Amino acid sequence: MENLLQNLTFQDGLIPSVIVDEESQRVLTLCYMDEEALQKTLDTGEVHVFRRSKGRMMKKGESSGHIQKVREVRPDCEGKSLVIVVDQKVAGCHMGYLSCYFRKYDPDTDSFEVTDEKVFDPNDVY
Image (cartoon, rainbow, N blue to C red; front, side, top):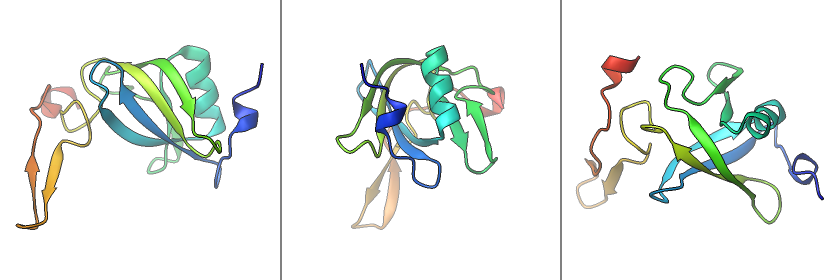
């Protein structure tokens, strides 16, 4: 059996990881993992990420309780990125939506339209 970590390329110590909801098949977010976060994800079965803005690893849902249970880990053909399929608890976006991709851009009006409904109020959680 091949070792996942040995078959991945971490650029500047990170690998981009697309998180996908198992039930809806929607992309929830794009995050980055360092080797420690990926190993912790594999060991615990819950997504851990490297937060570039905070310079540290953290468990997804650490503050909100909206954890992501790992169902599948899929490396791309070159080992340069991952898709991680999860069972999402409540929502993946800190702004209250299931997905961080809750807006659609309209080039005709150069504006955004919110296309999803909030599933929780961030003011009640953070």
